[in-house]
Length: 571
Image (cartoon, rainbow, N blue to C red; front, top):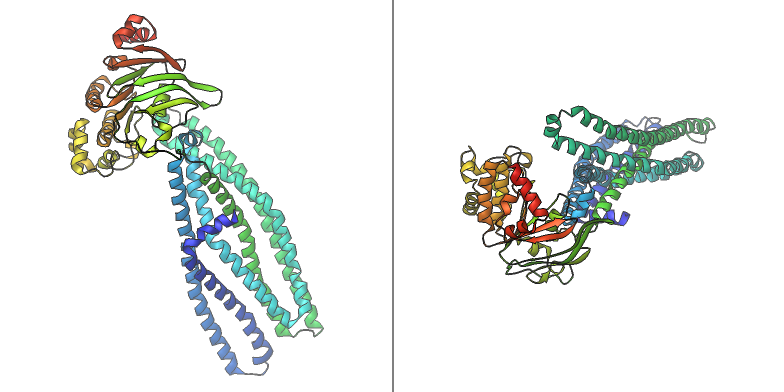
């Protein structure tokens, strides 16, 4: 873990080395003051040497001016080392998130992931900057003070420094409980973020159902758990600080008593005694830094551990022999496909389908039967448990993810739009598209005239997840996006089920145009929209139970016929 953490310093090692050199010089500057004070008290003042007294003061002033410049460099550039490392880590983990399988996002909430990227990396950044710097400063000052004080009186120095191992032992002892407590509180921060993300994203739903009180109660559960975890962490921290603070205070008592005793017997002069007092008071600062470092180490190490857990999550793995899918015709085959999201929970069982190039196949059946799962398996969002899916005769297991997915367009019921402009969201289908191509895609999706009626046209900001748009407008934008992508295979997953009849008719025209010349798989709730499909497949109890044209299935008097008659009567 330590070696892995240190590796993030490598791109910034020049600045880091300069930072450490500046920290070293600051330590030397701090050590000069007691030395000059001792000379003043023992030599310059008793000998009434005013010239050396003034000279020493001027030297000390110059040293402090130098220290000011060095401190500025350490505070600024040192922090930049931490910030740059944090940026490198965030970039690495973001790129890793793009490669994680769908199963990871099925099992982890957005707020928890956000906590690891934001909060944890902030703690790591602070450790990256302050950790080595505080440790280095403290050690230099302690070693320098020890060596210098030994030249004054070895036995007195050993007596005073004998308390350091006690402090170190106490710090190590308290470290374990602090680490566990801070790790638990870090987990609870992730839970809080997840709850906030859900609550804020669903604020319109909670208001519509007048369930603000219920949301507050849910939030309070997580908030109370966070308080308890923080309480445990701060109790451990309080024990650490109070115990270490007492040892430091005890050190001052020892210096007064032992130093006074040595001065009383004439084993050291008064100037040496003052020098001891100054060194020990200065010595408290690096000790406090070391104590702070231990606390910082707990937070930073816990954050880095959680960061590594995320980074070590296995990514989607392509076959070593994966090839590019080129000149796609769109012939799709399901060969005895079975799939489970979780072991023991069967979702698809022995699915066999043959979707010919350019044909439209509709999937119908009860909710939860596995229709959407079939759509998710074609782009290889999930690995199969059994069987094989082939595109133009090639198993999707042997096709690169990028070439497979760029040839598949998906229009879903729940449209996701990114915060930004109309233009940016349509261009997501082809990031290299020209303005003319974007406009043409919007026209084919029957949304161009609506866009032009807005003041900012294609530069209109749509808000978070397209909140400023109607359901039909969002759906047409998603269709425009797919037009721009121009895939050989099209998947329509309940694309019009949430729309009113007038909007559905408008969007259905755009979808009909989109389907032309493409192999299309349609999941539909409204059976009237798929009557003209080349084949209709009924999925029931996780497998195929019926298949045929609309007319054939009506004659069979099976589940499809019952579903269709039920909708016909309702309409």
